[in-house]
Length: 275
Ligand SMILES: Nc1ncnc2c1ncn2[C@@H]1O[C@H](COP(=O)(O)OP(=O)(O)O)[C@@H](O)[C@H]1O
Ligand SMILES: [Mg+2]
Image (cartoon, rainbow, N blue to C red; front, side):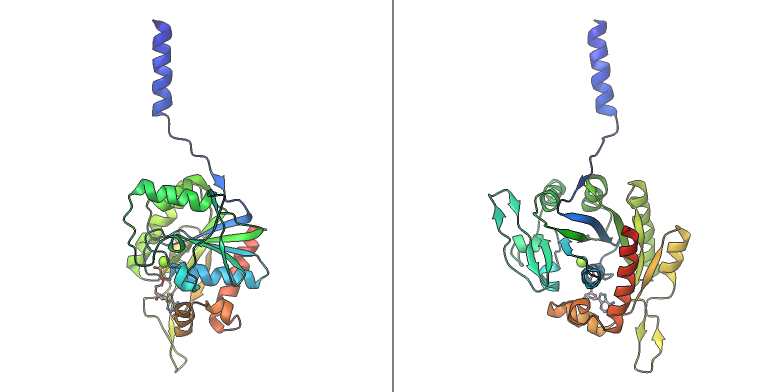
């Protein structure tokens, strides 16, 4: 009788204990960086891809993983729409463009097909993209995250070994509120925040004046408030938008552009954080 009770106690204890997650590394890369934002439309994908090529310009071998299962944008940003081949039906071979290895849900489904998946299916897709892609010989994989603090973020924070996260925001109060939530989520799940980037920080007119369209200094202030690094300010620039719309990111097509130089500066800080 007591034996039975002990057994039940033990079983109950096991059930109630907080779930232990195992963080699996992404194989085939030395470092893994998340580019995250708590809010959509702040330019996260633009920043992720341009930062990746800025790291490439510093001599790093890069991979880009688009983890936005519902709204993949990598196929458009680098103008690539092929189906990845699989190796013996189990693992996926990443596509290659501009010397970057790339993977996105957008390569696997039709562009017009809406993703109407529930959470568990998203998590299973993410596990495939993090565990079953044959990345090869990469120095760094930059991961473009979907907005928010939902299933994808939690899966990455709890089950994938990442070396750090970068949070992108616009200086608007509304966006900053979400940034604070994002910071807290990474802090709670033990993901190191490499720093914050202020995107669409200002617009430089033909008159040379800087117009602060979304406000000023908020991202830097938030970084200070939470004791995080502030990585830099990226202006609103037509060339940056046009380059990604054309499918050849500015830092790749024009590494000497004034905006590419800002990305270079941020990339140097990221590279330094790995050493
Ligand atoms: N600094 C910038 N200057 C000009 N356009 C930008 C800038 N950042 C982003 N964009 C544009 O804003 C839109 C949203 O950017 P995107 O990177 O898709 O955001 P997110 O991934 O956060 O949803 C895109 O059309 C993109 O080209
Ligand atoms: Mg995006």
